[in-house]
Image 1 (cartoon, rainbow, N blue to C red):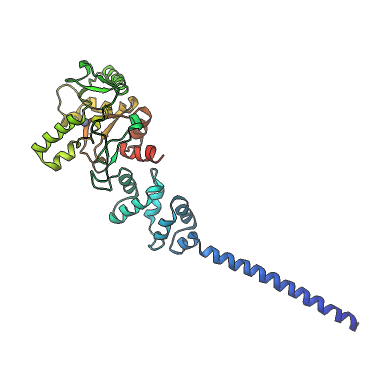
Image 2 (cartoon, rainbow, N blue to C red):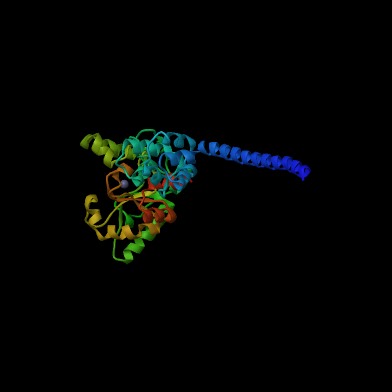
Length: 317
Ligand SMILES: [Zn+2]
């Protein structure tokens, strides 16, 4: 009996030791895991009030520089709203943040819209060359400039039937305009071209004449500086109908018809009402730009400007 008891003791000690070692290992692994987790953005973001899901969204849709700066701030749901906007472009995150923090009353939609269009900067600052290789989708605005000597290779004369005075357009835009003209005509509407292609020199004359008569501020709201006019692309038309001036074109049936149908022919209203801070131009109900049916349909259906379209679908695609 005594001998058996003595033999049991070492076995018990052995079992206890094994249990202790296992518990020790499990505890150590758990501690290391926990310490590592505390180093993650997820843990740190949750600490300042974001949910696990929000933290994961922020990690997936932004970068470490942004996350590091976010950790120095209080919880703000606008950052989440920005990264979940339909036209959010990840590489522009620092511009969104800068704009938002300087305009705290802006909604996330406004922040993304403004930055994508480049309109968070001062007009005519940080000017880049227009990428002519984008063809009918080339952009020309207050931040993109065409070379002074740029003249489209495929300009054609517009027949007087369609226009007041002598005008030229790029062949593709002209063909699309004729289709649109005919479709409108079938509904009893007449859309007449007032002005189409303008060379750098033409625009220089227009701009300088505005400048002499109205001063810088007014001129920049209505007339593009030379090299910055869409009319130099040969893809743009100013239109009218019988007996109305530019300022009252939006009261005509022709205008209403264009609102509903222009995109089906590849044309967009380039400077819409309410988007003055995005395009940099006052509302121009008469100015239409040819971009092709696919782009025009997206722009029409999503109620965005070509400036935003270009940033999202062309430049950062
Ligand atoms: Zn125009």
